[in-house]
Image (cartoon, rainbow over all chains, first blue to last red; front, side, top):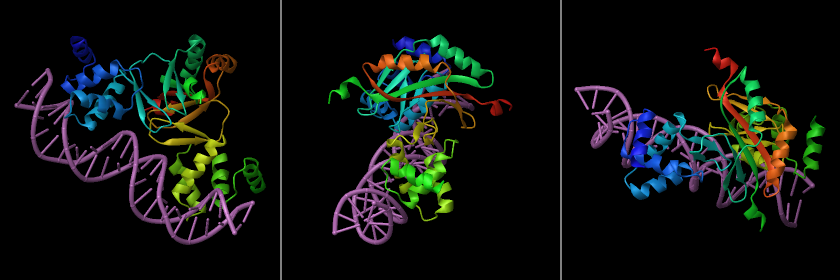
Length: 139
Length: 139
DNA sequence: GTACTTGCAAAATATTTGCGTTTAT
DNA sequence: ATAAACGCAAATATTTTGCAAGTAC
């Protein structure tokens, strides 16, 4: 794993630092769509001296490199997702939980996007569903 | 127009105030996806004493009533859209412009959403495309 | 008359920046 | 050796909140 992270950083031409190695290791295995602060707190457990600015800077770098998706939800925070293959997010407006879904009929959808693409250079897309999740519906 | 706005507020059971009338009038005719501050500045031209807190509170109310869509883009601001019929947004990561598109194959897409709907109560959805717009591509 | 709305100022949140020091290559 | 990255603290940006005064109904 350790080696993997280092190689991964090298492949992406990112200078290797202990901070980046740790952030990347935690974030690549986290499919819970953590916010920057949640990542900071988790990183801090293992590296108490780390600054939140470093976390923000690293996340920005990873997003620019296409390693992470930055997602904007109505809670006003940015959330990060290591699963960069296009998929769909369900956002529970009650508990603020984020749940992944695969996109069905992806070919049709992407064909449609390609049509727009003639005029617009589309780099990525996001589909977000808003509603009340199974668990919150109970109450 | 004036009458329309008043009736519209009454229909939606919103207490009529000069502030709300003006905000609604400006925002219902604005398809440029303005941010809260942009709306505030526009409203202020006609009503200089208005507070930005009133604008935020009114926009929140209008969103809750389903009159406006609140959209989250990577610029960290909320943008408001009076066109509440599901459609698609293109966000230019260069100039930060937001452009509307209609959704093709909407039936297929909504059928897919209905499938999820069995377990999740979906109230609305957003599709955002990110890229470089025609104008920015020139340079 | 009463509950709701407003304006103001302060607070809360999230993110970014400047800068001197440290570190990776 | 040098450019990049770090930690810290301050700054910025956006949105929210508490409250006294005003207003809609």
